[in-house]
Length: 406
Image (cartoon, rainbow, N blue to C red; front, side):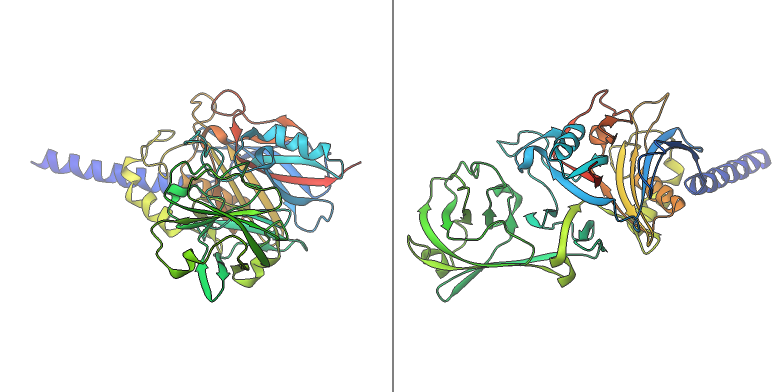
């Protein structure tokens, strides 16, 4: 009996020590190896070898006080329904001639497969060059930069409506799949050539006479050109398509007739988001006010006794995976890519570990971007990291750091 009690005590002590070790492991510093030291003042690029588990990250630190460096985003093939490699997007932006992309990483989540023609649809807020392309969904995992360079990551919502006669209807989505839950969706020319709505489950109203593109703060009159119930309407280059679900029985629906007119209004709340020039949305806020998301902390503590370094998990928040993140503090913007799924080189990180490393680097705010085989780190048109798919994957959008062209 005494032997059994002693054995239990030893096991309890062992698991306690292991749990403490695991809880501390994300707080330890890694080894930094500087790369590309001569690209631009205010820009540091380095490889970060995390010293407590087998993980390699590539980090770009961008000084917020360096006026030559700017934050931008880019859509694959310049439209929602498209996929393209990060390197290709960066090269295309540089070829525009006014600015050069020096660092690029993959961006936000969306539909990677074809999904009945909807491959490319984005999951969260996306603003490019002042054009509101997709509305916020995960309101807390959003990041935007204004024309003056101010960073914004407060929770954000869209307020949008379409007025016709004495009636008004709320617009729930911009450039989304019909199956994603919105009953009223606005399709812009940025979406693609047609709405891809292949079933007769609503009306599609062609609107003209508007000033485009849609911006975060927008109000414009429109005219009704046509009303159809056939689906998959062509999107005019100078107009919009309004899709209204057949489930909506409001009197306003019958008011949409050829030659009718009205007003569309769009805004973001809180109001500071209406000045955003570029914005990207992720999935899960990693850091807020210098603290790790409590949901991630609770998951980490709950699963300490199950933690196996480098092991994948069916629950993605706990799985060691390739990761991409965007973080910042008062002085610096961080872009981070963690390689993974390569045991002899880099096994990846859990979201808690990723957040902990970002704190160690100095970030106080951070969001999780798309990861897995999408995680890509490009410097001067060259892929620097080792994507887990053994080659660069075509993704939906990208985040750029640009500088003045020579």
